[in-house]
Image (tube, rainbow, N blue to C red; front, side, top):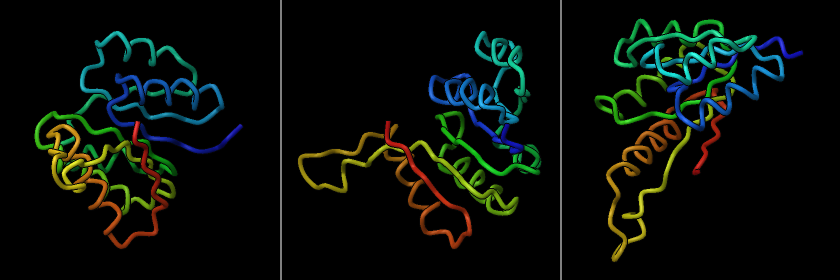
Length: 148
């Protein structure tokens, strides 16, 4: 059984909830961040062995720092709650400061980098901006990015 802790952000979404279920079944200690602990998926996750559901705002820097305290791995899927770029950068900075060893960021491509006729898609381009920030940060973090 792994003696490691994994933080998941926005755990009521399909990606993060799936990671939570599998990681918990494999024996990881899972910190599952949610915006609302009354959400049906949050309720389900709270019943799983090895999962701790934590409700809080990703715009609260103290809360974000605590999410990563003592954690080895993280799966991040930012959503458009507030300023997604600022939240994404804050999460990456906090993970770096906490010494996270493996940081998985769920990203999307920015089609506008391919030129005409490919327009930027607003919901995707912000993820690409955060991905580039993470890549450019001098960091000992091993980064993986997922383009679902």
